[in-house]
Length: 129
Image (cartoon, rainbow, N blue to C red; front, top):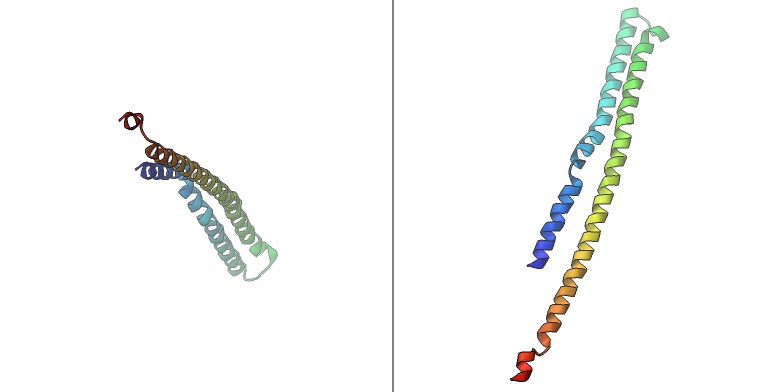
């Protein structure tokens, strides 16, 4: 019974520690795609510039390529620290959960050992009888 309650409390604390991490995971996993989308749109813009001018000169493609690079950089700028933060917080949550599991296990083992020893000792009322 005590082990079950300790497990429930550990799970509750683990959920609390992980609260909000799904948002970080979502941002970290989608931000590179936002950057990729910007890259594709920038390249499309560059090709439109080529089509409009009828040539492939620097002036025709530079705005589109600049847009593509800015969007790519933005996606990476958001994704990299977000993924690093997510990994850091997940590692911390796992470490706290592990420590709680070890500590509760040791405490419960000790309580079971004490309970087992007290049952094997003769009670005072039994000695007198």
